[in-house]
Image (tube, rainbow over all chains, first blue to last red; front, side, top):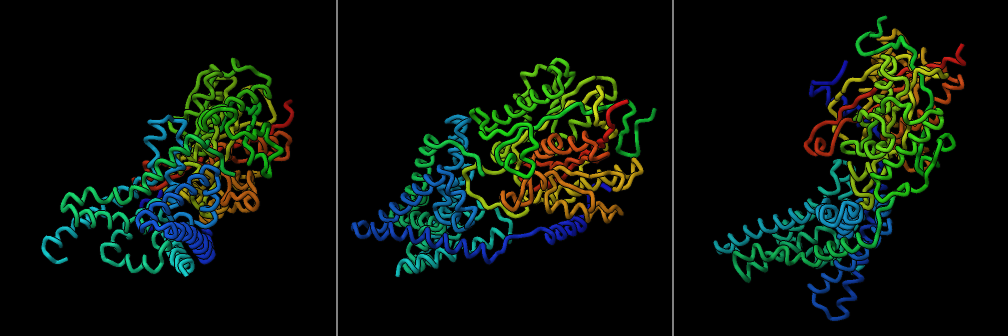
Length: 155
Length: 118
Length: 340
């Protein structure tokens, strides 16, 4: 007996495993994500509306909204509550900027034992790093295309 | 009205990502990257602004909005400063979110201890 | 005196006994179906230490002390220690056992480590190289999550196929000194890879290895499943269990009636939110020490095949797109009654 070398046989085993592995009810999970995600966005809307009532411009209001949501998420992460929300609603708590904040706060809290520099310092962006890297890179790339199109007087 | 639009648009984006999580075995980190990049692309194609006007927080709170923010930052910097704007615009626009996460995250590490899951 | 049996097994001619064993677990395990069986349940997940890794070391130190007490021997009576764990470079074992001041052979078998430790320990005693050997292992939910998955505070949804790493340490003293339980043979496991890459479905990754070792044990010893009171795997969980039964059926063996899995015994997945079941080196080790061996000691069972299973991967191999192969170490344990 032993290992399988044949790629087709490997696929067969994978398909068999898929058949016998139970999965979550997709519809129920989607509803939970929908509701929690929507509520978090509404919380953001409350903050935006308040900022507008204080006559802040769009940019400043947006910054306050992000900061407030991030702060709330970090506190909930520290209190071990944000994880429960993600466990329950999946993408509903992962997709909003609060999920991003959780992914920065969590390694910061966990790796403190390994020191300020090599623990927290090196690993704080363990999970969220790709978001910054690819966000900055792709906006640069698209910006480059925009700049070229401007040069060619297309835009 | 704002609240209803923000709710159902934001909720829909989350529901769609839930499908990705369940059906494709994509890890959460990858989904976050996908959202940020998609936001930047939609912004580049001028599709994000009308969408953001309608859904307000429903478009800005998801990470999709962060991508839009980054691209808009680059675009405005290019308009003002030319080529160098490509490098000065992005991170600056995303500064509030990035700094906030880093600073609050670090402060959290000083205040909270790692806790076991139950 | 031919101790070599078939292709992968060994039948010990010299008598090798399990003199005693001990188990230390965390709160969740203490609240599970086997809660009362464990020697010690510690509610503090840090075990009084400052980091998860130190906590796991402390757990091993406690388990080692307990098993020596139960066997009424001193650390100096132990000729050699076989131990390992899931952390990189097995630091939980290294730091946990340093105070024992006895020779150590550090092991890595992932969750099959207790099987490996007992097999090697039995070989040492059967070969006349030691009168008392300590075989042990451990796992800690927090240190394993941190090492292999995500920081604890990070939110993620665990699929139904995922397992819950047991916080626990199990230790056995293997000896030439008589007791009620004998290690009569072992079947050494090979790495078995069916190409699966899903690290959230460990049971499916490891089941082929379990099937390989169990069927090889049958062939080498010329036995049938019915010759064992129980065949017990380490942590295949709900899904791995189903797959194993099917794989064994394909080989012509029906194990449905006397097959158990430690991962399914240690937690109640209905109330403890543990999905497919328990996992980790500590899973098989603590269930063996707390529940399986006592049943042999009392004579309730006469002969069992204990097959802890391991998934051989690292974070690097996983991200580089490699599959998750499995390995399973078989140990035959028998009741020999109050010795004549």
